[in-house]
Each structure stands twice: as C-alpha cells, then as structure tokens.
Length: 185
Image (cartoon, rainbow, N blue to C red; front, side, top):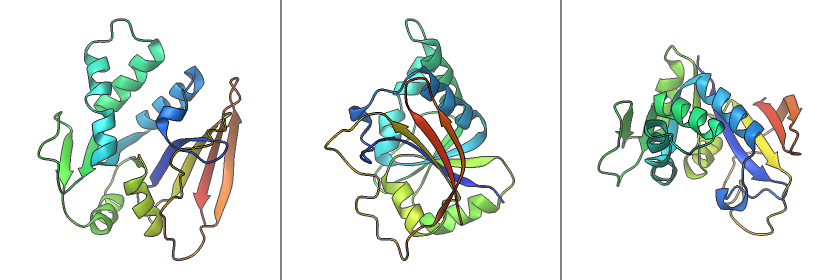
C-alpha cells in the first residue's frame, strides 16, 4: 500500500500562505528529494494553477535560475500529477490528468496500486483528505517567521476526531527552519 504524504511550509503561527515566506536552499533541497522519492502528486485546481506553468517553464528554460529552483522544477516536471477539479478544462504536460469523480474513492484506489509514495499539496484537497483520514504522513517545514495573518493550515477543517500524530523525525536547517515528519497513528 502506498503512503499519502502531505508536505507543506508553515510559519511558526501556522500560516500556510506561500506569499508569507521565502524558502531557503535547504528547504528547496528537502522538497526536491521528497518529490523525487514519490511518483505521484495530487492537487486541486488552485494549487495546480499556482505550480503550472511556473515550474515546468523553469525546467524547460532554466537560464538565470538558481540550482535549487532548477532541480525542484525538474523533479516537479517529471512526477505524475492528478488534478481534482470540476471546472478545469485542460492540463499541461504528458504526465498530468484531471479527475472529476469522488476524491475518497480515487485516493483509496491510488493508495492500493503499486508504486512509490503519493504527495498532496495545497490546502483544500489535503484538508479533505485529512478529514477522511487518508493522510498517512505529514511533513511540516516550519519557517522561523510569525506571519500574523494569512490562511492557517487547519482553517475550515472539520475532523471527526482529533488527529494523534507521532513525531518520527526532525531536522533543523541552518536558516532556522525545522522539518518535522509525523505519522498518523
């Protein structure tokens, strides 16, 4: 059975708005390796449109980009992607498809298939997956920032019961970011 992993950058006060932080070199390396270790990424429309065409364009035309940006772009571009959307008409790339059916049914099927881990990104789809109890692992990279505003990770989540997570790994980056790896009990 494949694991469903939810990796996300957060501020100390729980903000997950990407505009409130700027990932450093080590953070990019961390997310690049996580992407390389998976073979499928699952997004909603908003996150997909935030990532595409931005990262595939860097992968195709890396001139002037940092090495970390290029490596992440290449990892992102090469991974298979599924976009859950009722409104998106088309997607870019040979390795991306749209699914309009039931999120829970599709994720359960995907987890039962052979393969590496599945990543999910953004907030809306992962929130639904958290509510359904389908997230196996959380990878929080806590940025040394207090944003004071912006969307919070658990905003709008209606859990049937609190999630009890087990910390299995932590790593402190030179920048002060802390990568935390939790498994769902």
